[in-house]
Length: 95
Image (cartoon, rainbow, N blue to C red; front, side, top):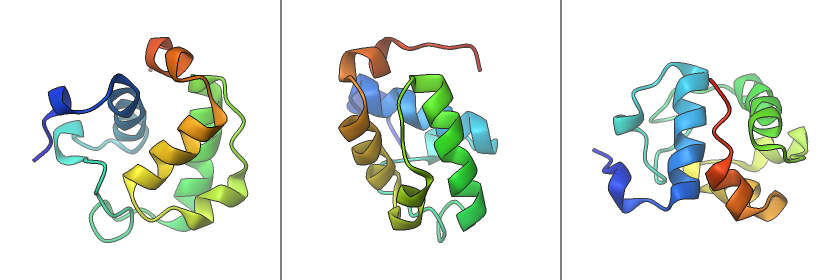
C-alpha cells in the first residue's frame, strides 16, 4: 500500500500521471511496483507512456528508454534526468 505523503512531489506527480494513463488506483502504485509483474503492463504500453509523460511534463524521453524500465522508480529516474524537477512538480496539466 502506497502512502503518497511519503513520496517527493515529483514522484507523486509521475505516479498520478501513470495511474491516470493506465486506469490504476494510485494508492496501489509505489516506486517499487514492478511494471510487468505488479501492474501487468506490456512493452508497447510503456512506449505509449513515454509520449504521455513527454506531453504532460514538457520533457523529451526517448521511447527506447521504455525498454529499460522495470519499476516505477526506473521511470521516475528517467523523468528526473530529462526534466526540471520544479517544472515536473508544478506541471499540473489537466488529465
